[in-house]
Length: 322
Ligand code: ATP
Ligand code: SF4
Ligand code: MG
Image 1 (cartoon, helix red, strand yellow):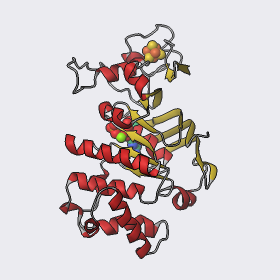
Image 2 (image 1 turned 180 degrees about the vertical axis):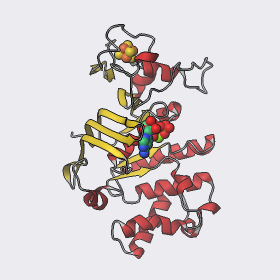
Image 3 (image 1 turned 30 degrees about the horizontal axis):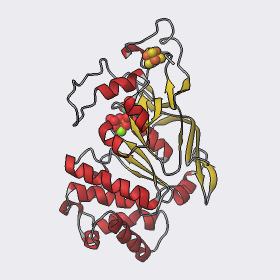
Image 4 (image 1 turned 90 degrees about the vertical axis):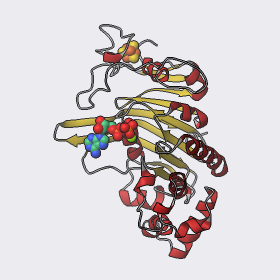
């Protein structure tokens, strides 16, 4: 079976007055059809930057992009999103094939524009649908996320946080994409609403045969839905593992630290703090980028040579210990 998405050595650097920020630096990764991968990693590790690179929504100050992002589609065949011109991405890919729920997007809804107008805007503007067709699609999408039709006529300020998040998710699925990228979809919500949204995402995944890239700080939440976990550190993907393997036996020292720093509801444990700071992506550490913080650093090797990614017991891991 071909995958849904295959990234090969993907890079995306920002240009700033202080230097080039290597936010995404040589990421290779395969996402299968119908699979949900959770991308985890500390703040500033490049998770959102990777998401923007996949959906090709890049800010003006991009200094360099490279690599291949192959998207395997029944209708379009195999296409390299990196090589697709923007107008084609807009007509054929965004919303229709790949959509995104942006970080903090529920708060980005325009408070003084009715839900209907916000939902139909991309359909009318970018996909050229008539208003009537667009309203019908919006209405159906709202139903799929458990919201009543009359929400269309409401303003975002009249909705609860959970309802707003449902609207944003409805927008992401309304054109029946194959892949939905969710950037911290529940971080602004209370615990019960978070659980409801996660259940909704699970339901939609099955119903519409979706694949997800779920970006989250909350590894416990990720464990609820993810088939695979991808760990990002300083612009690199350091481990990709099946979720059950990851939680039982994380292999990369950074993954181990991340899990140890994670609070759990089920068991009492001491939460460890990961010593040191996320490194600068302008001048990242040489060799393995984690070496200044790693308890297992191999002197003379880790700070000099970048570890290659190896397959270890079903996980992909970039570390000289393996
Ligand atoms: P968080 O968990 O806080 O959302 P993240 O993993 O999503 O973090 P990114 O937002 O992708 O991280 O940022 C990666 C790096 O790129 C950071 O060092 C950030 O400061 C930098 N960065 C992000 N956007 C820009 C930009 N437009 N211009 C320059 N640097 C940027
Ligand atoms: Fe630690 Fe070396 Fe592995 Fe990097 S390569 S995580 S420094 S042991
Ligand atoms: Mg982010």
